[in-house]
Image (cartoon, rainbow, N blue to C red; front, side, top):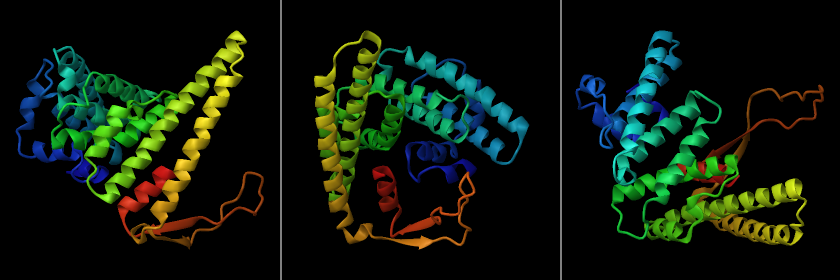
Amino acid sequence: MFARSHLATDGPVDRVLQELRLMDTSRLGKITGGSCKTAHFQAVLSFSTIIFGTKYGQADITRDGFVSHGTTLQQLNRALAEPNSHDSDEIIVSIITLAIQETLVPSSPNNFVNHMQGMEKILALRDPTLPQSPSTVHLYKCLRHMLLSAALIGGTPTILAKPEWKALLREHSTTEEQLQEQRLFEILADCTVLASERNKLLKRQRDDGEDTCAQIGSVRDGTERVCMELRIWRTEWGADPQNAFIKMPTTLESPQSATGDDKVAYPTEIVFTSIKSAQMFMLYN
């Protein structure tokens, strides 16, 4: 399917697309109610239609996709009203799909963050200390960078900073590479807590004239600790030969600055030995 080219292989949405290939998708259009077990199919179908129509400039297809998208939102809202809907992994896949769509074809500037804030509320209803299936843990791992991005953009703390969620994800990181990856996510999750606390203190200082210098000092200390942890992580990550990379000047002309100044750095390509290393480097930066 065309939509799979935009997704991580064997990621949550990609797996649904593979499943849909074996189904009679015409039956899904007849579903009018909301169900935790089927909402993700409708979400992925509308996502695929919108992406295809947008890519190839097919306005009619894109319009049909957004009509289907509206139906998806209605069905998802009805599904969320079902008892214990927060325990359904299909609900999580639905929201992941909607969030990915917003990064590729935004329907509103804030919708990605809104979807992830909704995801945070759903995860807050789950108990990470209970036994988890491999597929559920896989979902959580796929969510990490999305939750972190939305939390940093929105200035809110992510649930991934809570000790019980760190413990769950660390428990299911069985290789040194996975542990190193999880450690970076934990550090960045702590950043969301510090950023949120800083924003609250500055608001109290600005709006109420409150003296928050002592609390801000505490946040500053926490920030210095996190920066040190990041530097240590970067050193350890860079010491692994599998994470080696080379910098190569591109063949493009040097970009001009807005003032016409030619003293602008030439664009540089960074070539990694693996996709995973490139992803971790981007996340770190």
